Length: 297
Length: 297
Image (cartoon, rainbow over all chains, first blue to last red):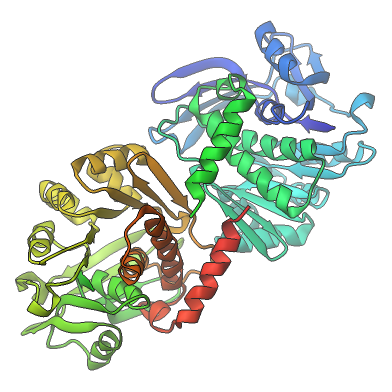
């Protein structure tokens, strides 16, 4: 059983070609929906009373929502603008709203989850939540610049409590104050987690475990419309795949990273969550085959 | 037989840790020495009377120098400075010296070369030189921002006359005025060449042929000292490997790209040409195996 804890948001996304207002977003939304193509994830998240019914229905179609709280007030809102290369995003506005008052806890029904993904929440909340599960077999977390800048010690403490850390290259550098990504990963591994995945956007990712590196490319795409949620979709695919296999050996973790690249590539091909929600399982199998062909020599 | 045509230089390289004055450099130097681990390349290049004997000996140890001209005057000099991430280089000075007056031509002894690499020379010279060979089986060229900015039409014309183009991602974008690398490659292929390799530095490269993409990672390194010549070493390994195999099918071209990643990784591990000249063939075989392990899932 897989539980995903993280944010559900109404995003305003400004891309060079199109502006989306108040669309379904949030790290947990992307991660959990991505994972849902492999297993049925349970969500711990919060929305406000204004959360549209149509978005609720999308979540419901993919996830167990017994851990979704609906609080008085407005849903967490994020507003960001991409540059014309779509590789740099500037945050224009963040309104925490109900997320600010949320006191998350693990519902009884979720406590037996053996796989847990902590999306980029407040690291103190993540560290608290992970302890509420009865028997976690494999846990993974992500983090973002905001927490590294404001609660670095808590980020490190959180990382101590998980099996795997998934993090962007720039955030790994910021967190460890190292430039070389191997050095970054070694430093994070020294804090506790056994697996580090450094995401490099379109360039793929590096997986580290002990002295071994698995390097994987991103799936090359003719057209990228909206990079929002790509990294969350990557992480969701990883943990969703592992939960479905009920295995966590290195060989399966490498495969989960490949699925991460595949699901990340779907996420960016359409606006918002549409890159994921319109998928069929056969699309994923087909792209996995294309990916394998793309890297075989 | 392989001929490499391009620049031999005395480089001043300013890295955050060390400044190198008047060291052996140049696109043809790196490419040909990299290729020399696979076959014996013939060099067409020019140096001045000031070209140090010790550098001449290095070239002589690896290459056929019957096409190396020594002209009255000073050797071509380049002076560049890397930023602290080693990913951005600023050109401080370029002194063409004897390179400015050089009228290159293919020596009789080289005319039977079936493999030809045109390093980033003046595209008009490249287009002229390639016609002087009797029976080219596989030709490849590179180019740089300077020629794209000053002689774009000649660059395109040169590309029409070769089988394969090797080019940096940013230069591919500049040349084609496209952002997406698949679109860049398609546009260049429409001009004539059947194979396009877009180099992405530490992130590896993309090989395009018809509708197929081969995507490969860079070899992950703990320490990078000097990126100078990495792209030239990459291209030299490609054409050196192909010339040694006397094969140019897609499967061998993919393998040549992998050797390109391997030789590029050696080039950046030491200052100047030292990353290549100190290599043994067994180092290359060992790293190829490590590379295969690094990407296998």
